[in-house]
Image (cartoon, rainbow, N blue to C red; front, top):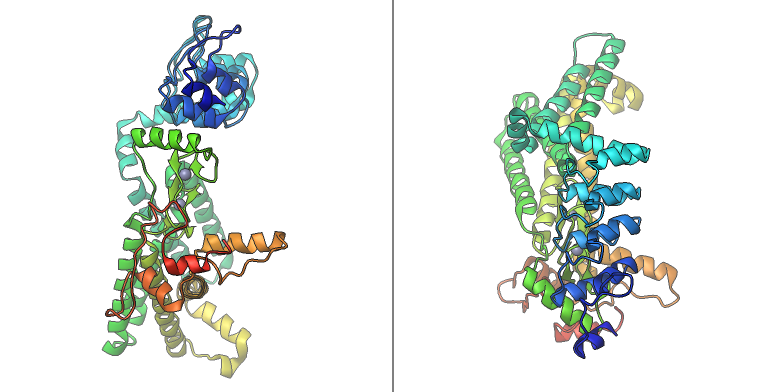
Length: 491
Ligand SMILES: [Zn+2]
Ligand SMILES: [Zn+2]
């Protein structure tokens, strides 16, 4: 109806009896597609009502929760605008109504903590007057963070935050290993030192900001790899100096680092669009009656391509989304999936070399074997012999098990199903709740084992297989290959 009225010449800027124009009513009734359509049609996001309230102020004051404030903030409104009566900013209004979600979002968007209204009150003054403890806590935290950010030393440290975190995690892993390997029989002393390191690391993670938090597992992974390499260099290299072992190990380590870097640094297929493109997309989708979450991502303001998904960790839509891998700190999508598989395979090979070398070390350095003394005596001897080696062995074992399972699942999905992890899981969930079972193997994306592999690795196998690359960042409809369409009766 809105589209029809605008086509017939309706003026969206007219004000009703209560002083609102169409965009304010769309905000009050939480009609996000209408807000998007009105903005795309040229209405300003900072349009004021009779009292000088912008849509952002109305949303922060009247609608408790994330939406539509979060959506409006993506349309670049002015967070510093004030109303005509009380001269409050949107942050003042959010605090006044106790809308804690909106307070959080507005602070993230750069709202000023020092802004004063007509009575000279800051948002913090209002939070204290209304005895809203949570809002007071959030505002106080932001003030503290702002004051620490202003120190020059901390500012320069912030630049190298990831490198510093990596240095600290490498030191923590090293410290744990060093304590375990201490030349003392007192396990009480070791326990106390370990508790101290654990408490220190817990304290440290509190200082890591939200943006860097998602990289912590990836940094832990790389730090573990660093110590595994050092262990090989210091403990295993002098024992087994044969080039038949050393060269394959170093080559697999190099390939692991290379494919980790390629998976991490390659664009997984983030969907981006300019402001102009966004407006055109909103208008065309709205006029086609498709401006809904299946076709349009209200977080990224983009039209979702086929097989794409919004990653909440990266806050972006990713083409042919497979998963968000915490050990890489990156999404796995159309752009880097082909590097992820060799990364897993390299990790598996490195893990097996490390496990093999550890067994040789134990056989040579610890005077025990499972066959001779049984499992429990063997474990006891191994712990006493070198706790550091056991510690690195356990870390590497965990990563090797993860890589093995992940590699098996990935190869099965890619070669035999032609699906991503996300698609396989959603189909399985759908099958569990539906009477009409969909075969995982009969989807439009399964083109047969060899063709699936050729499409995935983008290779023709010396011209033996016909290769038709699909750009999944621009594929919006189900019509791509004739062979796919033959199967397109299930999804
Ligand atoms: Zn998105
Ligand atoms: Zn992600």
